[in-house]
Image (cartoon, rainbow, N blue to C red; front, side, top):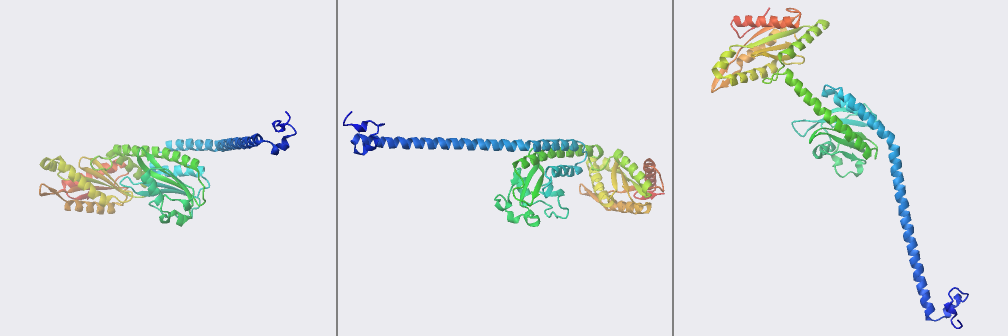
Length: 404
């Protein structure tokens, strides 16, 4: 191949390519392009490998976090099971907020404040029902809720706020918590049954990024559980009220009242106190029903009940519809004070005017008054004796108070 040394690409003549023909120059250009493509291909493979490594590292990190959280999640489940068992023992809604906040304190021992707001059934209003504070000296000023709580009430959504300085959903400048307690982060969730928000629980911290999504999930689970029991206890209370209250007047029925009377007599015996009982009967009530109809009679019963509540029902006193037009009132008063209260009620009812078909109907009552231990020593004896004095008042002309 004399005369064409440049064709021996792998030979020792390669350094002399500069003196070769145009074919040699073309080869050099192709060689450069090939090298650039190879380099680019290697860079792409390097980037792909690096991306795969990053994805693997992220997956390992995620699985490591999940693995580390397994003990915590198990503990949270156990706490929820404990809460479920404890809520199952409740027979009154009054203790539910305390139970729930106690368990949340175990789940979030390093948080600063836990607030339990209940929603007023009549409207979109909140009331601070219970608190669990890390520092008992801290004062909770938002007794009717903060702007955060009303947002949750309206949206019916749980909220995680890791940093109030960067928050955009709320007008933070108008909020109370950041100013009064230097709150920097919080989680909050509605107590929702169906589509109804029964209340809100908010957990606070003065530190930024104190809570994460897993904390919010646990709080939401607790709130869902608490809401179910709240609704259950409310329904139980309503059923119980139906069993012990008169549907027309809303007063206690005879059996429940006598049971309470026994308890009060036993308490008066132990504490050496006095209690009194009024037996109240509407005069000529059958005549009113016969003349004006039972709807008018029912109206008079409700009006009389309303007046009796205003006059007689103070702290510890009870009022009962004993049957028909008869009422019983338990007063934690001495006999003399009870007689004065009975006279006040009698006069108030006598002055009460009921308008029926453009006509004023007068209503009067006869009242018997008995006191423990002056006149009777048991609940049953008190009822019997008060009934005797009431009939004595009727026989003496009605519209009067009679006692021993």
